[in-house]
Image (spheres, rainbow, N blue to C red):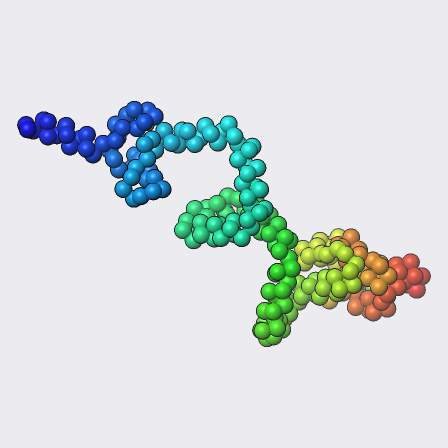
Length: 236
Ligand SMILES: [Zn+2]
Ligand SMILES: [Zn+2]
């Protein structure tokens, strides 16, 4: 066996012919992926060909594939969460980049997940505050406004009036009222305002932002469960 034959033999042993494009490539992970069976068996088709096949398959079956994924996501919510969690763990940089580029979409997904599992979250937080009573008090001190929103929403939920509002809604309402009491028009002293239901919850008013007005403490106390027209009669 001369040197040339030996070299040719070596080349043949360490290369692999792609069944699709018929090119010879080194039998390494750079050119072939492994089969599911064993660590030592390479696929018959080179990576480039596989990528092209996958791409064409995806392009021509896009709608079907997306539909399939969506169906899977609705029937396997736990698996999706787990897969995503593992992905985030293994690809921290890529995930951070994704969040940076798709901030709104990520927030939307989180919100949808929260809405779909709202009872679970409520149960968690109920239990959390029962186990950590001091946290509840600290939160109230640190976030007086959010706290007020929470308390109002909780009360309305108990009554079953429907609707909810956020701290952001309150800020908007505050701005739209120019920082003045809805009823008497007096300027609020800093954040000294009450969250009031225009149509009281006790009279069937909703807890949605549309039914919320900000009032000075005095007006809120005097109004109590009166309807707007009943209270207005008293004012003038
Ligand atoms: Zn190929
Ligand atoms: Zn007032």
